[in-house]
Image (cartoon, rainbow, N blue to C red; front, side, top):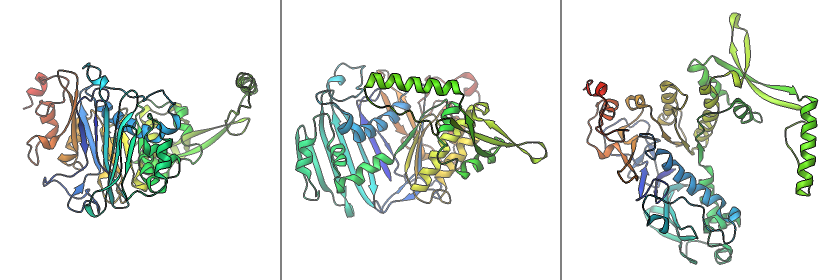
Length: 425
């Protein structure tokens, strides 16, 4: 379970900003809250929805978490010796490119809370730490300061050998996982399990290719049918690849092999068969007609991608991060996705959702508590500030959408609400 995440000195995020899943003491609906055995005195929300003007830094918050994940997964295997760390420091103040970026996170694995984080300059990872909290007592697993790594007595394994393999531009956690460190592999796998989806426009071929191997989850089809897209089923369609295209493929393979000096394999399933997905619509007389995904709406194609990952997260109890949830999607479709996470009947395994959006209608949804609403706002110096609605005094039953549009909570394109909105007050 993801408990909280913080970042500093990354893109428009200057000073340290934090997103937390901890539920507040507000007397809002309790039905969808998640219990956490590692934190028995508190509960956690299953979804956090982030609002803000264009270019306020909502996507940069998502990017900070994605960057942390990428550094953990790939810094040891893809980082080149002596090449430094690929980071994006805050550029609107000359001192920040020279100071470290920081990322830290709290999460649980098998009912044990962990706190992990690191700092990085352009040249190297300068600090890294991991603590475990069984029965709420802190146990140091390791602390890194520059090239020195201090191991706690609770961390067993080939720690010293792996430390010698850890480059300045590689995280120890990344190196440990790549060297089969038994105790740290589960931590690595937590980060590996986080799924991100941010594509606003999904071409038909991409949406089709995502489902060619395993097909489309029946629940996705049921969802599409329930929101009246007209979709009632799907099929895989095999098409003979024209001889001309096969010839081009063979010629391309020959050229690539000459350039690389080795054998090249171009995978496209069977040599002369191309497989696509078509969605079924019920026509007159109950007969089904099948449509290529290029003929479907942009929203339907995007839902195929988002819902596939959503149901996987719900099944496995994983975190999923969706940037611009409302892109090409109707308000009611977005609300139904939120309901999947905020209802115990459909979220039995503690899955969590982070979503950015501009859809203010969702603020009125009965499935969202006030402590699930967050805002991103840029200061006059161009730095993003992240804050929850609970930092602002509200009352149960307030029209949160109207309050936001009237500028009571900030995070609007302009400090002055438009005259048409002001007239609604």
